[in-house]
Length: 293
Image (cartoon, rainbow, N blue to C red; front, side):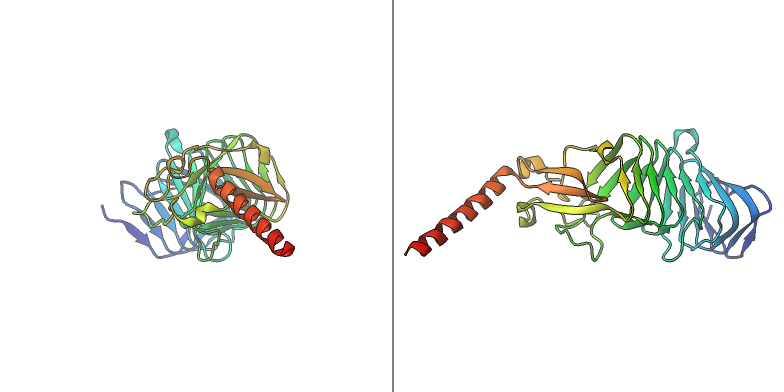
């Protein structure tokens, strides 16, 4: 069955089940919730590009993609219910202005992957079993208010170039306009992409001879619970599939808090550090000899 596009505005008077079958639904018009919290049950993948207004939203889905690219104005809050039957939903936020979920609070239930490069203005809570995956390989996801990650909420961070510079975007970042809370055990997976996917990361590049760092969470307010963070993966492959352990024995990544920010740090293998120290020592000795002459 072909995908379906609805260009007209929709006015909802009750709860709605959207779509049937395996096709996708594209809702290009505005959606008026008429002053109530409406439950939208997604029976297929659904893409909202218009404004959602006047009410609150409860989204129920099972193994679906739900995308938001419009700027919405409703203030009743949004709940993305736990994915039905232990499935996984991909929730993409890719609005270029305003807030994808209006001004109210957002709650993301278990089994939902929250990603994209858009903005969310309300206080956001991610419940245990959900996954934060910012960007669109890679990208920057912005939260205008507080972000709370309950215990068991993990994150995937991507780096796609041998650089610390993020313009143009080369690594994932989460911008938090309020406070950031890690409420329990929270893991981070470092993903360096593949050549086929467009990543340029190569352990053979001289970029990796020196210590490096990237701001993962850029936080305006305060950060609490950073000690709950840990790396999920201990083996790291570059875009070609080469292992960091094989290419640079002793090199490592770690997670650290710097001020309110959460940072990914890279430390090169000891041999690189030793060579750098030897070089500095040699330079100092040469200068001392010149002073004696």
